[in-house]
Amino acid sequence: MNTTPESRCTILYIDDEEKALKYFRMAFAPKFSILTASSGEEGLAMLRKEAGKIGVVVSDQRMPGMIGAEVLGRVREEFPHVVRILTTAYSDLPSAILAVNKGHIYQYVVKPWEVPELEMVLHRAVDYHHVLSERDELLRLKLTTLQRIICCDRVKWLLLTFGEGVPAGAFRKALFALLRSLAAFPPPSQPPEAGFRRDQFDAASLIGEEFHAGVQLKAALEKADESGTVLPLCEPVSRLGERGPLLAATLGAFISSLPGDVSASVATTDGVRVLLSPASPGFVEDLSGVLFAAKPHMRSMLLLKILWRFVEADIPLSIELVRAGQEPLRISPAKETVSADEVIEALRGVFEAWDVASR
Image (cartoon, rainbow, N blue to C red; front, side, top):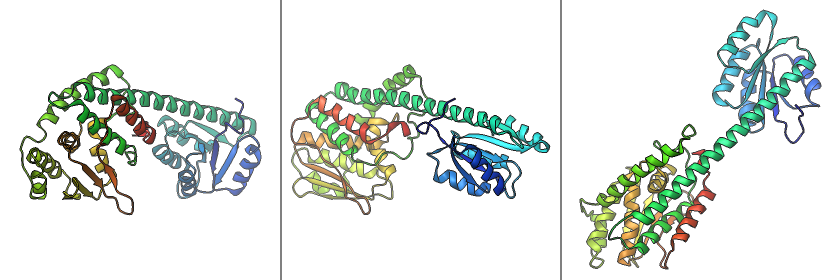
């Protein structure tokens, strides 16, 4: 029940009566961090601005424009982690009870309120907010840990079980190039459609799904460029030695898979240079799917295949993702030998740059 300056969250009080706002500040500012607003619209605007600080919202029921229950309903929709309290006169009790039953508020307090009684309610609300915050942090940690285990397993599985006929050194260089570049990419803005979500905590089920996904992924990778189509854009690549036609076919399949708003250009001076523009966050997420998504997009698998085939052919390759107003992001296999430990360390670098639990 003790609230220290270090642990207390901010309480937002919304009331259209200036005297009530002043009285609330005088009564509770010594014990709590207090913000006030004189209307529902002002309160919501303040909450959007200070969402990281505000843990409890107290709103009067009778206000012009937007009544308290409606304000708290909006708070619940936009900020479900915020604890909501309604204050109301005896004559408004039916509406307050209705709001409680619908789950819109944590508690209602009858006006005129007694300071000691309301202070106890506020202490409990703050404690409850701390409990919710700690629960969310534990869930975030659990999800992050599980997700990292599964992502590590995906990379290890690719390293250990993929492909007959693919030199291990070439494949490690391809994975390393992709992971090293992803660490510099902006973190995903939202979870992929088939990715891991906060409501998925059955580790055994997820790992089992990952095994089946791995089997399907291997088959899809092997068939990714079976058509052998060589785009006119890739014709110069087809003339780069004995493996040129195969490289041109894989690169052509990758370019054919690009979304309509992404253009590609290919140059063959001092190796092969591919420019992709513009590179949106969603497009980058697609390219990382072979490592992180339960059902990766085909272009992600083709990208990995391009990387290892160019390494096998000993032809330098640079794929540059062009972003408006920013430096291009480059994916380019290293010339030196890459160990499995370096691949795993590169994966850790991605985790450092991306908060996977927010996906």
